[in-house]
Image (cartoon, rainbow, N blue to C red; front, side, top):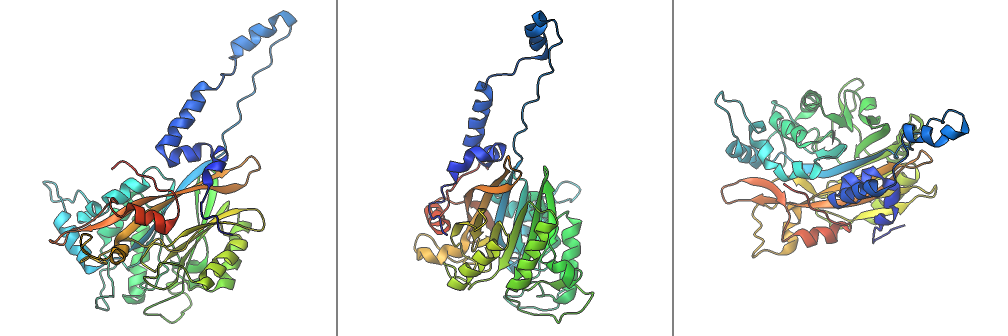
Length: 405
């Protein structure tokens, strides 16, 4: 089931334009192919060629349309540790009228993330903090995010956020209610939580260029569970049977691609458990094309799997942290390499394309390696990975690509 080498490039001819977007080198290759392909005769040339036959020349047939394709991006956990507030405040830049030029400084924190998702069609991450002005609980591992954080996430190019995680109720049901409203205000799609339990568990659809993508999100853990209450905001918990039913329902509702985001696994473990692997395979067999994992706060491998119906699926067991204050005291020059794993980050890019048979397939995957940089002054900034790049590639087991800042 596992293609450890992830030889996606053999299928590049099916990906067409979508793969050209994925990497600049491929884009140049596609442009070259278009430039050297023989051109079709013009209508005037067609008419001249048939004039001696004494009949009107037939109208030229239009060239076949290129198969539709998309590039999707997936990031890890966005955690509103208290230290992010101070880092954002130091990075804030304002104009003469006092208006922030970078989302109250949060935009500066995610500079490399913006470059990593630039140009993709749909970008997804896990928002592991309520965004609310109402503080109901306090504590080192109890989170409360500010709304400018969402402005920075949206400004960086993200479209869809999972709210199904163990911190969703850190500030009670009012905190979740505020988060849902704030996400909507910033033009983002929330999945895994909703105004009712039904809304929380149902798929959310996003369509780009005629490809309909369904997102589902679940969490296996919850720090402050709220009792189920009909008609009130809720978070969808992970139960495999109902999830598979929703996967199948998304297909019946016309989804070309089904993505299941799962908040699961053991924190800081660098490999998925056997029961996770088996569950992910069953969810793929039920119809999911991508399974995207969060919660361990460290990167785990990405697996390519062929379902029994012939589909190629992708499973990312954990995408680690995207923005956080974890391991802030780690010193790469003297510390153990593994102690910095929570500061490793990556944006997983996946190219999908509609084949001539009309089926949308996963074509290619790669990752952009990132690193959470901390300074003695408390600054936090996501930057391209350098010395940790090889370790990130080894953890994910996918090809790495770099992007211009």
